[in-house]
Figure (cartoon, helix red, strand yellow):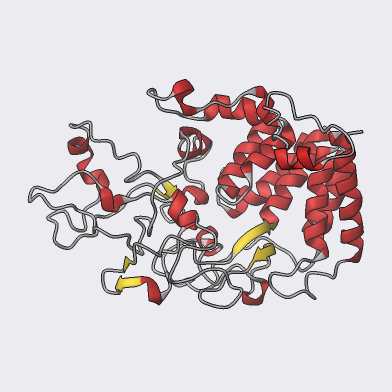
Length: 395
């Protein structure tokens, strides 16, 4: 007989309870290894799925209250002397691990360039390709300066124009603009963290050093679409000025090898303490304590020098928006929305499509709140009929 969703979560909770009780502490494990705190974090999320809100708060508190964890609140790391802020520092290359003083990383995936087992390579695309997928491609910008020269260099550049991005995933209007209306001056929306305007980087152009915003009226006179060529994006997806030396075509211009650049060349957070606060806030909200939920939200917002939230602000939509502000690109967003049964509702409400595509290219439906069961699993289950989830084809 097929197990229920609740029974499946219960099995996950039991496994994580065992892991939390038996894994070593975070000060014992090496960078990249799993500690008991990683298990407690995942256990808190699993308890939320079971609506065991008090247990979720308790598990998250183990992580938050551990004397060896803390949100990073001061500048640190490889570019701490460069213009920026502490949120920007969290995502610079070499800054993610406890060994460099980062007390916020709970579980960090390790990536090394051209090292056996390190995944990322200087000769091919491999590893986390947030740069390629999430940052724009200005080297294909359709507008020219008065001399007929493209104001952007014809290759990806290790600067704030997005590295070797190809503009696959442009943020929704809600992500790019809507969530920041609560406080536009939030550090996570600073010029360092959410890049909204860039300087032209082609020295041969008459516009060299000028900004996109200096010519908006000109660009609006034509119908040439720049939706992939530039859009606001989070700088955490790339490593401006820190790409591996092997990738540079011209180290002065910082142009990048078009065939192999595009990976995000830094270690990647799988669990970061800021998310633990967000999970505990969700637990408090579920238990009916909006004031405590606001306290946890404000621990994060205070670090970002952002306007503090109130208990009256607290609902699941506010927490989901705060997750976007803090964890944009980092979190597995679909898993979060699926867990809450809100994939259909939130996607239908906020996703922007294109008028020439069927349903604006957004074909989400209520049954998508559950993933389909892979046909290979249905076929492999020879002892009984494993029925496909409603709304999906059985083959």
